Length: 455
Image (cartoon, rainbow, N blue to C red):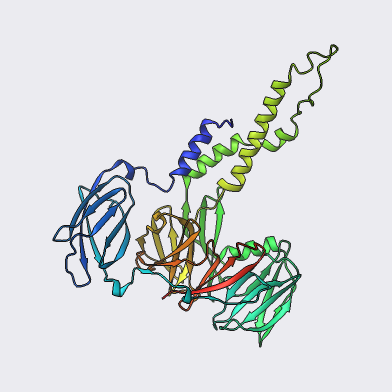
């Protein structure tokens, strides 16, 4: 049986519940709510679920429930109305009872959830032998594809109907297409990166640069205009992210925002000390000799074998722990910045808040967020191509759900289910459609491009 140190066990316990505020779990709060429809009429006999508590509304639409788990998911259902789903947070100045008002809509006006039928899902590029590796949506409703036909690889440009406009051959086995902060498109390989351009129905591919240096530099830049460049930098084992604004005229740099998971960083440091030099120990450990038949001349040749096996097993365990640390535990804290409408918004999931800046880097305001507490959260936010809407991604048994987040107040407005395909990849959204790549479950080597209506 694999042995873990006390620090390792403590680390696992923290990771299992790091999304839950420990002070919230110690409080039992009473939630009193009222359920009404769009006209303000109280809804009686509605089913209410708050965390693990169940309740029903009375004739005045009132319900009462208790819970100790915050944030708590609130779900209200009624046969005549659409399902309502939200999260209830514990206020900072909480005293006794939390008041909640729920407004639900009739099923003939389904706004909280959009369930699509097969007729609203389209196979964009239905060529049987075309394997779609990656794609990027274009502002003119076109699509730029990176794909392969049998043994040949191409970049292809499609129109809005999925018809091929032009193509150009490329090197084999590209990794992905990448669009940087200046809207330039790059073709990325494991050893190089090519800038591309689409002009007059022709695709140009220019001299490659160093993939590691150039791609890493491009990915750290999130916004640029004629005056400012905003970029981020990770430190402290990727548990601290710092956003900086660089004035392109004066070259002066100032810090906009710093987000840090100090507790996790401290635990990772302790874990790293335990797994230090694990590879050296493994390769310099002498394995036990192969088993041999016992003879009269060497009856005790296996006398020290149990100890040798124990040393080798300990070295292997430490090496396994180090790889677990390198590949799984060292994941960057997710505090992304997005350009939305006329603002730049940082979503600090560690502190349950969104911070709004002007595009000049001036702090405007902040508001609470809680979308990351819904079950199945995939640590991913997606903006549409127009940069006007924001969606959070969730998964349950392979099926993907997108919750639209209001960028003005952080509220969840509706749910979109991608019901036709499991584990969709490279999700992009443009003009009331969600696009994604689906991997054929019968032939894992083939990837197809689909789109689905949002409304």
